[in-house]
Amino acid sequence: MTENAIGEGLERRKLLKLLLSGPLLLTTSSLHAQTAPAPARVFGSDAGMILNTIKPEKTADFEIVIERLKAALSASTDPVRKQQAAGWKVFKALEPGGNNTVLYVFWINPAVKGADYTVSKILYEAFPNDVPDLYQKFSGAYAGGQTMVNLQLLSAMAPSAV
Image 1 (cartoon, one colour):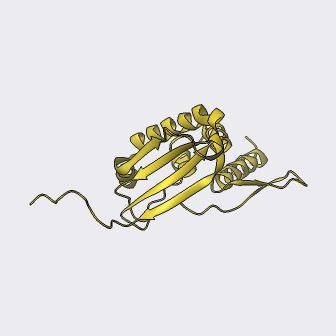
Image 2 (tube, rainbow, N blue to C red):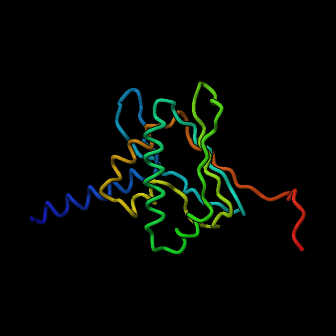
Image 3 (cartoon, rainbow, N blue to C red):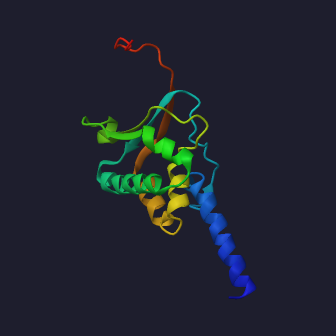
């Protein structure tokens, strides 16, 4: 392998990492892809939710990515990723959302404070070669963005066991 080929390979990996760190922004005038830094999906509270509004015709793609995310978390040897997996559940709303979208809720309880829940980063750690396809499925499934909600417990309705 030539030095130039090695450098090109490194540049492709850097570009892939950059693409995975944020959403693609397309301008209608130029149709050139530019990346914008995405905020990390980090909770500073005891529990949280991430709301995902998905196109109805793309639910299968989204669910494929969720299964790969589950596999990535299960296979991880990182103790933080193990903690994240223990408190992370994914729900699908039975009722249609606005514009007939499908709502998926990432319910995270307990949240691992300070841990990054960015799906693309977790997938990249486990499946770096599969990420371009997975990212295309994941980002292409969204009818809107993600809404992240940090939650603070106000009241527990069940009496505490004494």
